[in-house]
Amino acid sequence: MFNLAKLAELARDSSAAGRRSLVSTLTDLFVSSGDDRDEQISLLFGDIVLKVLGQLEEETRIILSKRVCKEKDAPRDLMVKLAQDAFPVAGPVLENSPALTSDDLVAIASSASMEHLGAIAGRETVDKAVTSVLVDRGDSSVLSKVAENQGAEFADASFLKLVDKARSSEAIQAALINRTDLPEEAAHALLPFLTEELKERVSALGADSTLVQLLAERAATEVAARAHKLEEAREQSNALIRDVVNKKTKIDEAVTLFARSDRTAELGILLAKVSNLPPAAVSQLLFSSSDKPLIILCKANGVTAEAYKDILTMRARRLRIGGLELNAAIQRYAALSEDGARRSLETLKQSGANFGLKTEEEKIEAETVRSKKNIPFASSR
Image (cartoon, rainbow, N blue to C red; front, side, top):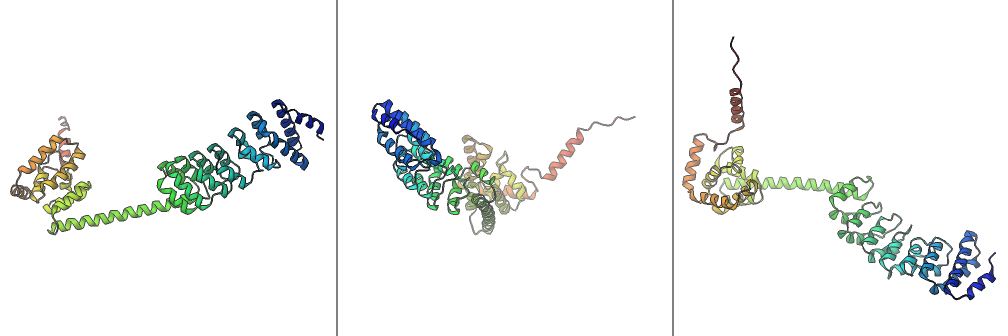
């Protein structure tokens, strides 16, 4: 049974120490009475503490907040007042108090500081009305915290807003990939800007994750699209080469396209087809140390100096050719006439030469001869 006389005596003491003693005594009385406390005690506690709250030092208010923040029967008006206080006082109440309603939290979150919002984001449960305000107002720290909170519920619209804000925050992205309640629309929006590291973490999640399923579907779609694109590109290249061979398209058009896109295989096939030479041998010419055979091939088939520069640029990237060497190569190309190049090409074709490049069979044969020369003679008896 509490002592009313003692409370009345404390209430008459208006000093800071007196107020501290009064609040401490009332708090002891309230907390110690537990779940079986009389309603009169709760009302008395709330009424008196609310009246003197503005006279208490912050340190005293912090102590009060920490002591009553988890009490489910704590006076709601008092808890709202504490929750609106400076963050050191408000934090414990905002994060823990079961006395605060959703409407209370929405009202506080609508104008409070980011620290206050962060405390609300860490509550054991946060309903959709509250998360909606947090998503609208929160900074990256608040948003990542509420996204990590598995007790927080989000409306689909809030999820979409959260995903949009996650574009510039890997912390929010990392929190979102672990949510099992992420709707498909939000998951679709999130996938495109996840880092490779986060995608690997998604892949490690359970098969029931929406993101895992979408990632697998997207990978399969991308593989199919790439394969289709490659097939289309191959068909277009073959058609272009046929048109050049049949004189329907100028060779410069194909040379420029293949050289600028670094499609060396197609360029080698093109030059081989128009020259009636083996593609394997011609492909080797593109990056051989001597450009003389390549000059003959291109010049003989009417490749202009402008288109040949594209081939030279491609060679320069691979062979690390400098500016002076490029200029010299351009001059060598200009110095050879088309007629001279055609004669040189025909002479080489008639002689069966392959521009000084050995075929695979010739390479093997040369290696065998070299090996035999290095075998010492057997001693005679």
